[in-house]
Amino acid sequence: MKKRMAAVISAVAALAIVLTVIVTAFIYHGIYEESIRASLVEEVDILASAYTPNGAIQSLYKGSGRLTLIGEDGSVEYDSVAISAEMVNHGDRKEVKEALATGRGSDQRQSDTLSIKQLYEAVRLPDGKVLRLSKEASTLLAFFSLSAGPVISLVIVLLILVVFISARASDYLVAPINALDLDNPEDNRTYDEISPLLLKIARQKREMAEELKDKERARNEFEFIVSSLSEGLVVLSRDGKVLSFNKSAGKLLSCSLELGEHFITLLPFSEGKDAVLSSLKGEDGEAVFTVKGRVIELSAYHSGSGAVVLMRDISEKSERDRMRREFTANVSHELKTPITTIMGFSELMKDSSLPSDKVVEFSAEINKEALRLKDTVSDIISLSSLDEGKLGEKKNINLSSSVKEEVDKLKNKAQQMEVTVKWEVDPALTVRGWERTLSEVLSNLLDNAIRYNRKGGEVFIKGERAGKDAKITVSDTGIGIPEEAISRIFERFYRVDKSRSRESGGTGLGLSIVKNGVERMEGSVKAESRLGKGTTFIVKLPLGRES
Image (cartoon, rainbow, N blue to C red):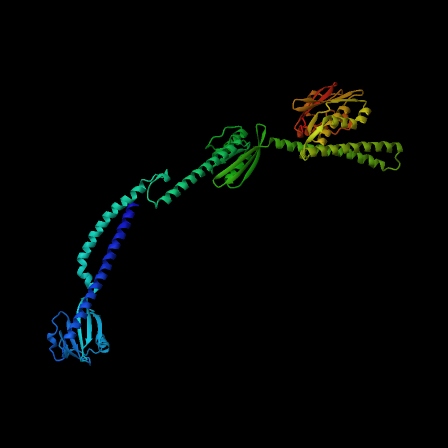
């Protein structure tokens, strides 16, 4: 910058010097020429006043100019330099024509070969003749040539001086700029012209600092989010080496990941390797494999600089899919049996020769299977509603009223089974949930307690406060449940004794409805039983909110 500044200053100064010399020459040449013309006019006027027609004109002028006397017809009567008789007629000369016409004329003519200019001034004499005086004047080029030596020497000296001064001036000008503290732009004391730049630098510095903070904050947030993900994330280079990963990736693969190692060597199955290789070649890939009993879903996506691998544990999803398939199969089976029975008996009843007692018997069987079909469909609908979770807004429900209502509904069935139902619930006790869901939970627990009881048996329902929950206990003196079956009784369509369950009309969905309903209301349920001694179900539900 300093060299460029010095060069610019020198060039500008040199140009100024040269222009000054040229302009000065033009000005002085003009003054020089004007002074010659002024003296020419003055001298010719003096000569004209001293002229007498009969006087000796050659003795009239002794100056350095050229004096000429021209007649009215343009003929040269006298010339101080040339022989007048040999000179051509001057009547067409500009200065002569102007003098004859107006009394005074002037002109200038430049030599084509010499660097001189001839100035003419003519006046008309009283006798009608014209007196002309001319002098030589140097042209601008000649004027320059005469002063070239001194002028060039002066210019050279000035240029040397300018180069020296510009070098020192550039050092002086640049020194404050070199001393700027860009770490603290606003604290500098320098040229006013630089102040806007320093303010802009300070503003941009603050903006950059804020931007860096934002980026650092975003990076920290990203790292926190990635590290908190339950899904495994691995970023790979073009050659399949690990560039970045989170903790979940190592946990899902049950191994330790390290930066720079080949990710493909860590994958347990060829499906995963093929998916990652495809992504590195430009095509996204997916795979599912099992690692230590967990089902892992791997998705590999191609990126411009490599690949991104996402992994997640889909064991629960796989289990739900398996249960859904089993549920569908069980539903098909459970519906197929009563429908087949109904179709079979109705086909037999089409025979007109069928005895009336058989018609009554077959009609009873059809009615029994239809009721069983209705109960199964009703339970399936209840489970579907619970699975979808579209139950509306929770509210406080009086537990005593709900238990009394369900006991009244099953009173006839209890009498038919010769089972006594007793209940004891705090009248002020409320639970938080949905009336329909609570009704289904209580109905299924009571129905099972009656259905799988013995003749002369008892069912006892108790509702009480237990800390922050309402505790509901449903006990019976029935057949009980084998210890090995207790862990499965809440599975859909699971029956401890299939033959007795079918005879009693059970669908195998009641306890599944109980478990799903209780969990939807954020409660818990468990069973305690001794084979042949009876079963107790303990349900805990959140207490109702105080208004």
